[in-house]
Length: 157
Image (cartoon, rainbow, N blue to C red; front, top):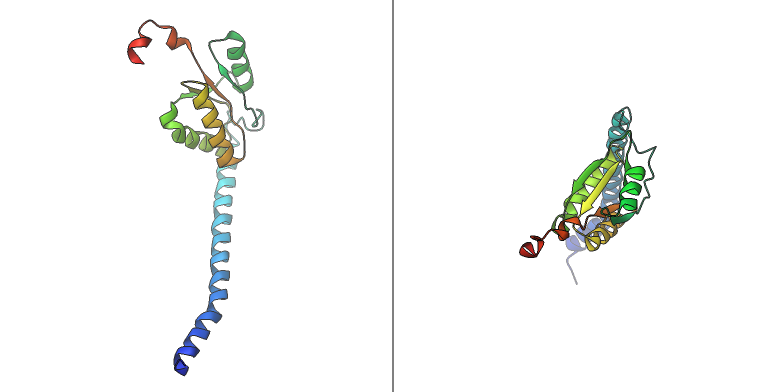
């Protein structure tokens, strides 16, 4: 049998365990609330911008396509432009997480008029899966096959 002092200290520790769990849960909730409050304040601060496009553009646009095709280019610009502006950024497969970071930050401040441009359909599909997993929202993504038409492309492949 254990000495009485050990039994007492174990039972005290066991009694404090639920309180620690409550304290941890409270701290986690408080941190999440602070983060949500900061997000809302940031969103509101940028909602006064002339280029706050979150309310005007479809945030569930999951378009993708080759911008070399005129119909795809027209659709991309019509569906993504806001006040004749589009935030164009390019990336390749190795930088998918940086593209994800940029998309999440643009959306956090209400700028939905972005157009990701990448090196091909496979990278677009990866980006769309990553964004959907991280945020629960779809994202558009486009590529251009035009560079592959250049005679020097074979050298770079």
